[in-house]
Image (cartoon, rainbow, N blue to C red; front, side, top):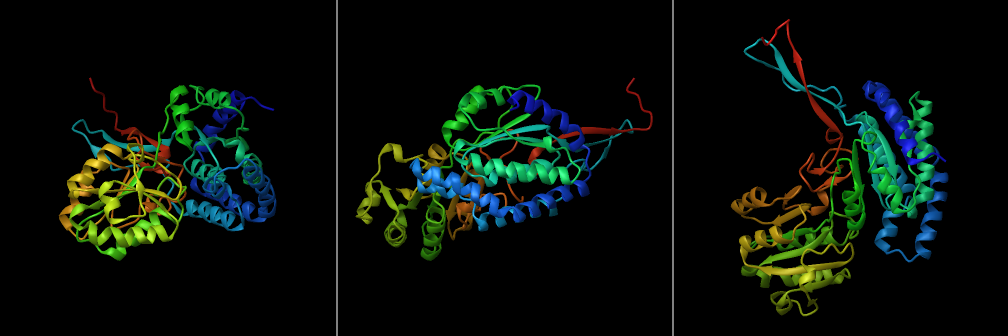
Length: 415
């Protein structure tokens, strides 16, 4: 078995050829990956069942098992995501407007791949394909290190991708699966300065903090998804109910799920009981402050730890706040720069929310679940950055490139 360093060296050797490919060749390889996923779906499902069985035996939470599942529906959805990436413009070598300077030279910026990208992730095996397709289209080579819980599924997906690359005439070293192991392997991978150009960790807070602490290469950070919905005075009750249910109930284990509901004190008596009732009917545990519990007797008492908590389960913190200023102050203190939504019918409040909330995605009258690369038009995303360097929010193709300056002259010298 190759060492992690040897795999990284092979990825570095493959990056020059991949960066030089035109769009047609990359899209043919993506089409081959999508076709191979469908053709080998029974194999993928068999391997995935081994991972699911082990996860159940280990007592993994239902939300984590849901992330791990790769059934026929998930395989088809993943294949379609690859095909969607094919339809997206190729960012490599795209050039912005050129500006003529007083010296007569023309200057502008042109996009180029980042190089070798290491992605460290947990549970979701679809990340293996999403990351491979996005790295391929953006001209980057990928080192993919999934968790032990998805070892069988990731191994077969790596085989599918390698076969599709070889059949398309591309170097299979452009996408490699790093075998799962202990944290020492992760530490080695993210310490390979000079071989790895960027590390993207996806998973729990513990994994991400471990990568950030030990990395000797740049890291895209996303520690928590503490997402809020603020119900402004005068907002529509049915809209508020639908936004809360979609944000909390549909898929409580994802990073853009709702974790805290804020309600304007001026209208809490009208808004909170029906919204809370709908959540309780769906089996959501509510943890509220004193003002919440006056209106919702079934709510449990919230503690200081419930504010800023990412539950990833059917648990929701609820707080009655003093107007928009109270909501903004709460989000500013407890938010994680992920997704923040307001339900309002007041234009000036919507504008203040958009302007003053610091988050990678800020929403007005829309569910926090929309902070997703596919929903925002990026195709399959490689992750969501909650820090501003070098990307903020879902990272699609453009976020996997950098810009270089290009200068076109006619013999000018600076003198």
